[in-house]
Image (cartoon, rainbow, N blue to C red):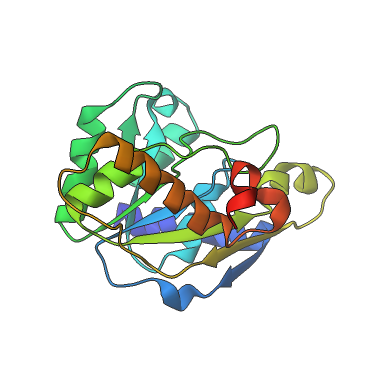
Length: 209
């Protein structure tokens, strides 16, 4: 009940203060699956929450645990706290349990926000490790406009934000996969996200689309 109440609150506020566009929402499969997004701002998670028709558990940086605003909201949404800058095996185990329960895992393969260029950074292998171990599909989702939300609201404008949902896909292998292949798969995931974005957002993957 707490999750549903928080979800309704967040999605209602997002639709009230922004103009939300969800494209190809029908591409979401039945759980379990991983929803993979590009990471532009704090508003990415609310947009993903609004776009996804299923209950979703997402990674969140452990540094926000004590934040008076984000901490309670993330806990209510069942966030998986992750320590950035290292391999957080506890968080990985939790993520696998989420998928084992036939739920949805949401994450940004880049691992951090692209605050300077607002374009794709190199993806990390955490998503491919989880996807190959759990043998679940990945749903690529391209987000645009979330980086401008605060600036536009300060100007008393309702910014337009958009989520484009791509076709779900499986990685070539499952189970225990060598690290060099996980690296290749991470670039594959990021390329699938890049295909859903305008050229200016594609960053290091611009040449792969």
